Amino acid sequence: MLPPPSPSGPPPLTAVEVSDLHVVLDGATILAGVDLTVATGEWVTVIGPNGAGKSTLLRAVGGLLPASGSISLFGTPTARLPRRQRARIVATVAQSPVVPPGMVVFDYVLLGRTPYIRPLGRESAADLAAVDDVLHRLDLTRFADRHLTTLSGGERQRVFLARALAQGATLLLLDEPTSALDIGHQQEVLELVDQLRRDDGLTVLATMHDLSVAGEYADRLLLLANGRVAATGTPTEVLTEQLLTNHYAATVRVLDTPNGPVVIPIRPT
Image 1 (cartoon, one colour):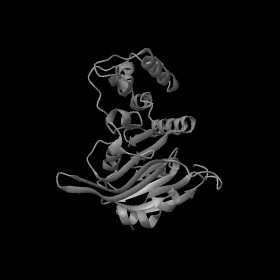
Image 2: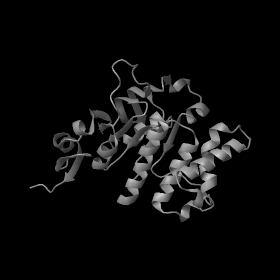
Image 3: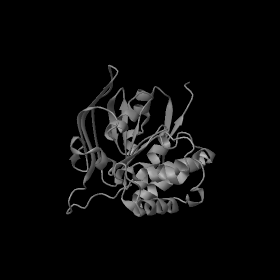
């Protein structure tokens, strides 16, 4: 968890500020009046039942969907950010990233340098060095010439993170980063993200289905239901039996542990 701000120091810079966000797709309202703030260096995870609008919120913050309301990144309204500049600030790892056929790891990670390469230009020595550095940090150098299709799920997820880091972005948007991974690779990926956050001062805004895991890694949770904010706060404040029963229509028991609340589904009696 992040330490509390010093009473005598300045307030932390806000990395993400969303106010009265509305998203309408094909005539259907997906998000209605969503407010969200994420401090620099914070990890906030969005939870909620299927169809609540979690992925839509991330895509809107990343500038991938039309939306009304206001979104600011590090104090600058996104409407004032040219696309190339925004790509240097925010990197998105989708649930199922599109990988061009035949793509090898090095070339895929190099795509993260696109915001720094002039139109019709070629990558520079600095771009290649940035990719080498990221591959080394994420222990992917030995896979540089491998096709992504030959890697395990955990290895591919690290490659997707490597591309995001190669962008040099300071805000990571992670949409269900562990949904296709077994429990061991889930821990591996999330520990990696948390270490990068602490080492590089990254800000993380994520979505997750696994409530216990979400509560273990996030500083704060935001619960969406029917496109609206149902609750926000620390994992202990949000992961309560009453809130989860009301909004997930599930019977659960929440146990307090040193690492945060653990949510256990139980059969209705």
